[in-house]
Image 1 (cartoon, rainbow, N blue to C red):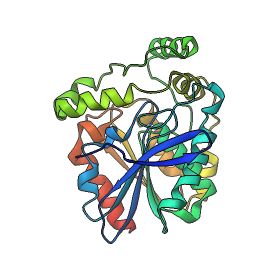
Image 2 (cartoon, one colour; image 1 turned 90 degrees about the horizontal axis):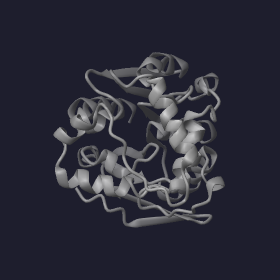
Image 3 (cartoon, rainbow, N blue to C red; image 1 turned 30 degrees about the horizontal axis):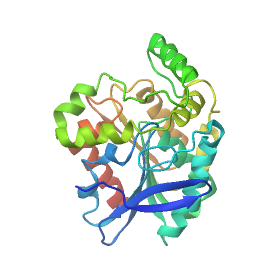
Image 4 (cartoon, rainbow, N blue to C red; image 1 turned 120 degrees about the vertical axis):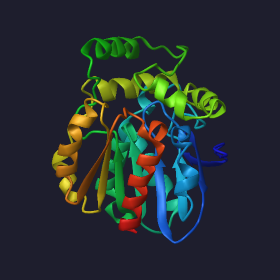
Length: 274
C-alpha cells in the first residue's frame, strides 16, 4: 500500500510526517513506531487494520520523513511525548487505540499517564517499562560505543539482527528497499541522544505508574525478543487491565515476520475494546 506520508504537523522547529487510512465504526488506531523506525515498520499491516477504522501513523522527530534538527538536546523522550500530545487532539475527536512499538511503547505509556481521556485502549508491542537493553552484553557495549561516537555526519544504517532473514523472507523486496531508505534517514543526533537515553540508563523504570492506566492493554512480545520477552509478563501484570500475547518464533518485529499472528492478536484486542 501507499505509505508515502503526505500530511505534516508543525511543532516547534519540527515538521512531523503523518497520514491516515481507512474508515468505519471502529475507534481510530494510532501507531507510534520505535527507535530508528518509521511507518514502514507496519507496511504489511496498515491496509488490513484500516478495513473498519481510521488508522493513523506518525513519524517521530528526527525519524523517517519528519524533519531533522542536528541538535542533540532537541531529542528526548519527553519531547516526543509532547509532540504526540500536541498532534493527536488536532486529528482525532474521540478516544483512540494507541499502539506503540519498542521505544514507541515507552512513549505511549508516558502519553497514557498525561492524557488518559484520549486513550480507549493501548497495545504495547515489544517494549518495556524498565531498562531497554540488548541481551548480549558484548553487543550492548558495542552499541553504546557507537552511540557515543556519533557525529552529525555519521552515516546511519539499519543493523543486521537475528530476525533480518525472517523480515526479508516475509516481505516484498521493493517495500524493504524503501523501508531501509526511509529508516536510514534517521538524524544522527537523534540516534545518539535517544540511543544513549534508551540503552545507557537514561530512563527510569515506570512500572509503578502503570496501574493508573485503567484502559485495556494488550502486551505483545516475540518469543526470542530478549530481554523484552522476559519483561512481558511483569508488564502485563503492572497495568490494571492487561493481557499478553507471546508470538512463537518471533523476535523484535513480529508485525513484519509473523504478520498473520500479530494482526489476529491486534484485531481481537481492538474489537473487544471498541
